[in-house]
Image (cartoon, rainbow, N blue to C red; front, side, top):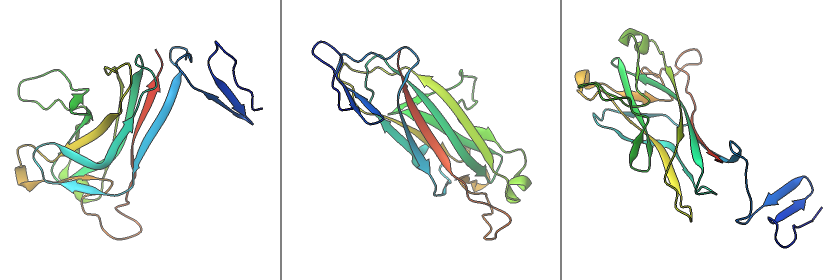
Length: 193
């Protein structure tokens, strides 16, 4: 208890059941999780925007400890739409991540989803959209904060003035049986290389 590493070794401080490592001499084995951060979105959101906009409450900042690290990003999001499709994308700062290969006019966003029937949405159906991506950002020798965030939109063609919803159903009826509210999360993990 209270032991600190000596000269020439990585500084280690022990206090009870806690070991604190600091300094440039600390080496983590490949695959080791260095830190985990999460944002939990408990509020609901909706949009009629036909282009991607920031989804409030779905961003997380991480400052890597090592310039060689990768970042594992996990998104769990409850969503609904008033007309078939829900568009969403994952960004690192201003760079979109995880897009599919270009295919003519088709949308390629990482977190897109389709609700099979507008009547299902009208009856309170929600979709659980899950995406996991191992990102390899360029991290300077003195690491700075990186922001991972979700952007979302309604249909890009604006058909039927559709809406996209997060953490709520389309009808959002106020009763104890139907149309529950939900919680969405974005989690980042720094992975040693």
